[in-house]
Length: 141
Image (cartoon, rainbow, N blue to C red):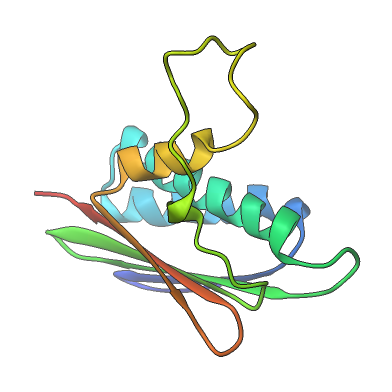
């Protein structure tokens, strides 16, 4: 992990076991930046949802991969960049979940990406030569 005042950088292998350590590192960075607990929760939940999807669906079983999270913070906004070497996939093209259905009636999936879209002000996906690049932007002002 690299943390230089307003920039956070973290690399993890495609393993769910590293997510709690990532969440703790982001919380520590957020506290130093003066973020509210609610903002730290939104950032961690958004990253966890996207990274879990990448790990579970983007890599062939048993294959190794690398995911990098970079957060750049200033007084106006946070920019979160997630890059990976997984199969190319744009999660933002998934259909929105039907929230009018009960939990029992609703098909599994889609709610995490819905929450990312709800918490972030801008979101985009780009395919790279080796995988995916997702950029999330949260306005602070």
